[in-house]
Amino acid sequence: MFESSPGGNIGFEPDIKLTAEMILIMGDLNAPAFHWFKELCIKGYLALRPYRQHFITLVALMLDTGLPCFRGHTLEQLNARLKPDASEAEAARYMHEVINRCALSLRTRLYDYIQYQQNSIPY
Image (cartoon, rainbow, N blue to C red; front, side, top):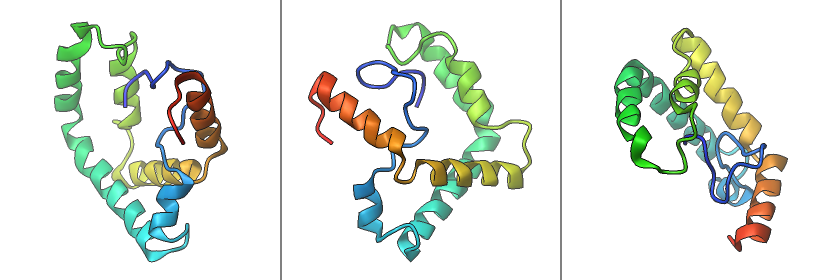
């Protein structure tokens, strides 16, 4: 969610981890369950945006914990992901694009493979 992935960032982590197995459980990319999943993700994202500053404040309180997920640009990246200057329609399109880009992403498969090789995290 922040700036670090298990095993450290390798430069092409997916925005959302959406594996083939996750999609298979929903049916496929055209299944009603997958469309419902996208709808709920977008609604959740839009519901969170008005409270953006509250979340940023909470995260700011955790920055000096020494957790590896905070690497120096956490607040800026979190703010950017919440698209503060976008309209609700633009933000919804952004999240729709994120989900579509991450569905069956080659980045996800490569990332999982590398995590398995480096850290024995099964995929």
